[in-house]
Length: 81
Image 1: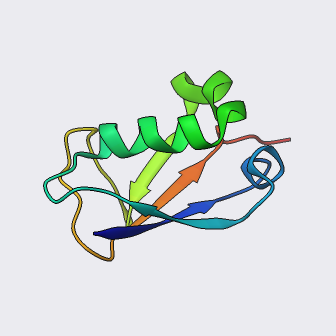
Image 2: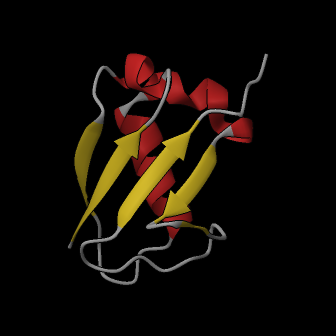
Image 3: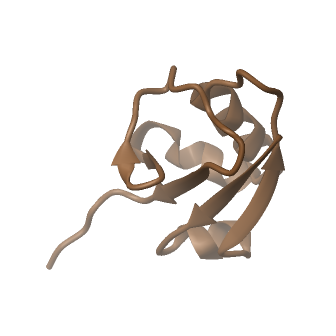
């Protein structure tokens, strides 16, 4: 099944894209999909501990089971100034 991945802020620079499609097996947990994303875009590995992740409009746990057509959004830490 396919899920869409969106990258925001400077994650677009790290990945050199704003979106991609990821093929995952049925029953795939978000954690597994994140590993696939990091292997595809190794520059994201340095941001592993501080990446904000949402599926659809909600922040979810890493054990969230993905569904066909889900949209994963990756955000860098919030910055202000």
